Amino acid sequence: MFKRPLVTWLLLLVGISAVALWWFQGPIALEVARRVATHEMNANAIRDLPDGLHVGLCGAGSPFPDDLRSGPCTLVVAGQRLLVFDAGTASARQIGRMGFWLGDIEAVLLTHFHSDHIGGLGELMLQRWLQGGHAKPLPVHGPLGVAEVVHGFDQAYRQDQGYRVEHHGDKWLPAAGFGATPVPYALPEKGTVTVLKEGDLEVVAFAVNHAPIHPAVGYRIRYKDRTVVLSGDTTANDQVLAQSKGVDVLVHEALSPGLVRLLSDVALQSGKPVVAKLMNDVLYYHATPEEAAQTARDAQVRFLVLNHIVPTLPPLPGMEKVFLGRARDIFKGPIKVGVDGDFVSLPSGSTTITWGNRL
Image (cartoon, rainbow, N blue to C red; front, side, top):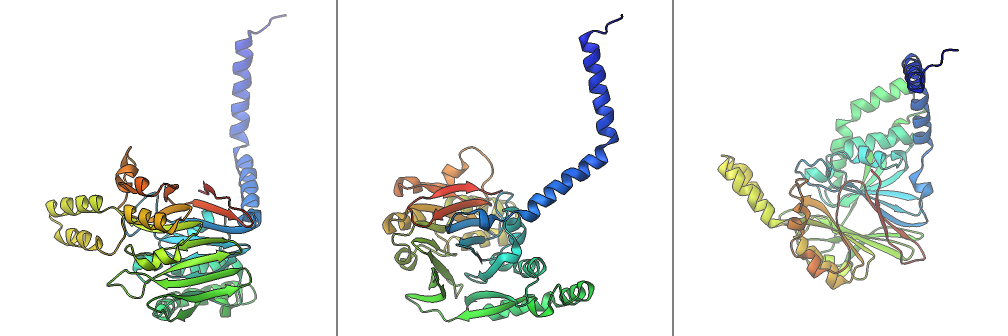
């Protein structure tokens, strides 16, 4: 009997397999899509997390275009409760990509009303309603002025609400649950104001220095025995230091003056004097990485996360070191220059801090 060489049989087998894959590629693709959809629909990041306080960067950037960092957004999971602090560009999409269900968002809390901190609020409000079928609007907490912001987004999305209720029916998308409800609070110059206090969760706001922008706040979040401070946009100041004393994690904004001045010089040389002027102006109402490190050191925090990164850091070797300057010499604890998806977990009843990225 004639025997084909082994190589011939292998080639024949590969050829038959390729034809089979081509012939059945449609059904195979559909089955893969079904499995992916099933996995995503049944995923519940909150359920899978240990009881404790968890902080994720759903936007670690600033108004500068940045492939690694969307507009400012920080999600906080306290036990089974999901809160979002600021809602910059792409907030809703990044929260979803990180494995969280937008319908689970309990409230949004704003630090101030610069456009990069509120630009994604409309989409976040809409998607929370669509995914959760809520009967009541999303609470949006913020200092005085938050009502004007919220009502503006409500008005802009009002026609969309009508389309969707008419299409799907009030039973599934209750018109009464559309949009958001502003929850303003008055802010003392010193000290704190309690924004939320229920059971094991407490959120307090405090004034920060982002002059001439006023009001501007930071937040301290406590769940059981774990604590986090979010600085908001600010220069280095005593309020952030006082509220950060002994916390597990400080999430602090940071701007590199040297890199911003470099961009200002380039803009001026390129015939863009307005851009150069704006670059110079931002130097005076943000903290440097070294100043954030000093606050972390003096407050004796355990972990420092830098966010609202200014300017965009090109993906070049050494850029992070340039950005940080002397920060690692000042604060001896761990420092993370944040990117979207970064996630810190603080299980209750322990001193453990775990770090990862959910994107």
